[in-house]
Amino acid sequence: MSHNLFLGMYTFAIKQFNTSNSDKVEVNQFLSEAYPNKEPKFSKGFVQDIINLLEEKAFKNTRNTHGATLADKSLNNESRILDLLIDGGLTGIKQFIIDESGNSEPLSDSDIIGPKFYCRIWLPAKSYNGYLFIQKYGSLSIKPIFDDILKKVLKRHNFNLINSSIQPTTTKARMKKFYKYSTLRDVIVVSNQSSNSTGPAKASSAVLRLNNFQSIGNKQIDRATINAAMQEHGFSMGNRHYQIKATYENKSEDFKEERTVILDSSDETINVIPNIRIPKDCIDKDNYPDFQKMKAFVDQEMLQVKLVAKL
Image (cartoon, rainbow, N blue to C red; front, side, top):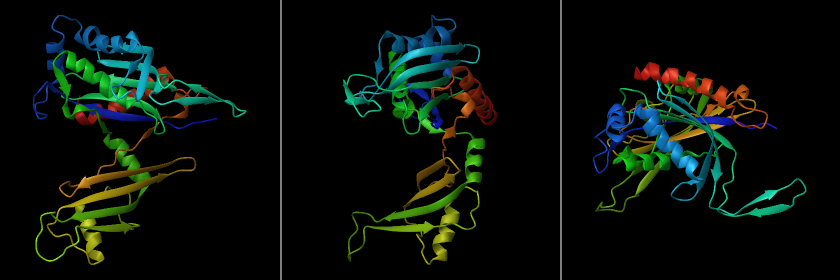
């Protein structure tokens, strides 16, 4: 029995409470102001706040959709890295345990149902961004837990997440690899008219689907490519505002990944954020992430981040 495990990569930025999203606070400044009497500030301050939330009792997010407890942890204070192994998953719905005979045993909607998850939190020095690496099983993720954990820790010290959440991201190496082995299945272009238009009757929107791109190869698509493809079929959006939805497919013998990205016409390129498939040697006999091997695997992903961000 084998399952595909994936790793999601996220970034977050910090600001003072009740300030603009443009007012980023550097990580060093946050630690200094939040933990003036703690040394080292990362391990004795920030990390301890997170551990306290997970160890006090079963932590549940504000919407009561996910819950977690701490199974294991590892700290590298010099690099400001906290690795966690979490027992967690879904809560807030009534679920059942079903045996091989088909018999079912109901569980309370207050129970947390789920496997083990690996997570890394990284606060690089002299940076305006923090990073998270959160392992998931297919679409089953505990990201909502870390949205709320970070918000609670920051709010305690009069700080907040910019845009109130952690944002998915990837490395350039991962993006190039995805483009190399994937195909652009289709692009949907949507143009909307103003709802305040007067005069003769007009359609409120137009939808154009472009299929089977032949010459794009493994390159990322941009507005110029889309405009050229539309003109090839006699269509032009001119200066109209339009939205672009691009769907990429990546197929192998035992795995298929489909990624759809929606962007405004103001964006120059469409950048896909692929899943990171975790190697089989990082998964134990119970189909759980191997804590020590996952740490080494994420170390390699961090090297790419450091290279691009010059950290």
